Length: 150
Image (cartoon, rainbow, N blue to C red):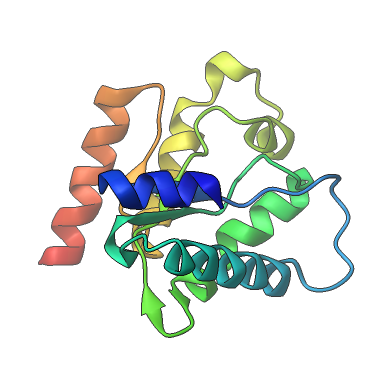
């Protein structure tokens, strides 16, 4: 694609987020997502974008039901390798509606649950997190890193 070509030209990173129109999947959602990311990485490679400039995002909250978002989170480890290559993964779960659906919480009361999804994401291999409540969630993530690095 055009964006990949421009990013390759300037050597800048690109975040490729999974999304689709609608929330229905004809087969296993993780299999669909792996195919999406295989196509994405092929487009990036064809455009000359260095693989270490490509960041993948499972697109939590986009083109998925609340239940599907939980399934994707549970099975994140299955996405860590695309065609035998490891990519950095960005996870954006902060305050999202699937948390409200799971815990019956309004958006302003989802910080701790967001932290739980971030900790889980780190354990599953995610290295970049997008959050609203930076200070408390960073502490949760730093503690998770300390445990993993012990």
